[in-house]
Length: 151
Length: 139
Image (cartoon, rainbow over the protein chains, first blue to last red):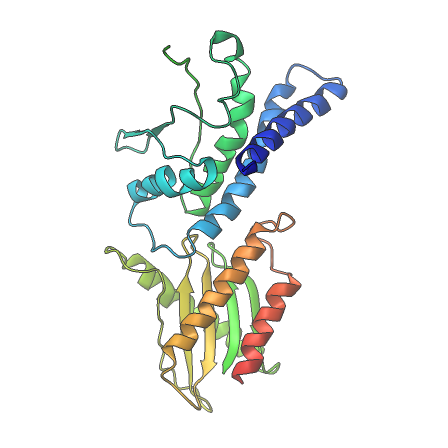
């Protein structure tokens, strides 16, 4: 079914729309930051709503690790249709989630040329995770990193 | 017999509060406020894996009437409080649970509404309708 692709197209269009709007307003340099924050803000609000829906029936979480596991499994499956491949923590508040085949980025060709453009496409997802976590009670900073795939 | 229904945000301010008899509204507001303390106590007592549906039973004997206050907390720390007038039946646990379930479902719908900013008072007509149905049917 075409359902999965619909969101990917919408997302791509969202990103290009926001950037086009900024460009047409004439100010170029510093506004990469506002574009990214606009996308992140959108993701934030959606994340909050999504969490409300997903946690409706599940019991409350015992601690932060439990919350992170929920994000890695149920949340990620519902949003990106797969689980997180790797979760690491330093037990002091930092968690690294690794997804080897991120669905919103698979369409970009692998190789170094588009590495710089990748953050635009990740802003929304960062916001999504931040919104989800904030609604669950964790204030946090979410950053994303893209690394080229080993061939 | 739900006499008053309230939705309280994470930071403990009311997002929505409605009571049936329009007189004595202040009394219900006060009751809901005091029940928050007990809810907090129950939340902090969670150390084991239990369902987040909590029951708060207050056998408060007010001068003229007998009522019970039930509480429920969502995973996003939003609290629902229902005050029931227990003049007729008292053991209706399942009914109370189903009322909370309906409240939670409607609240989720309100949350997902893009025009609603989390933290504002709830002004959705659908939510109002659902709450009125719960109060009318019960009294």
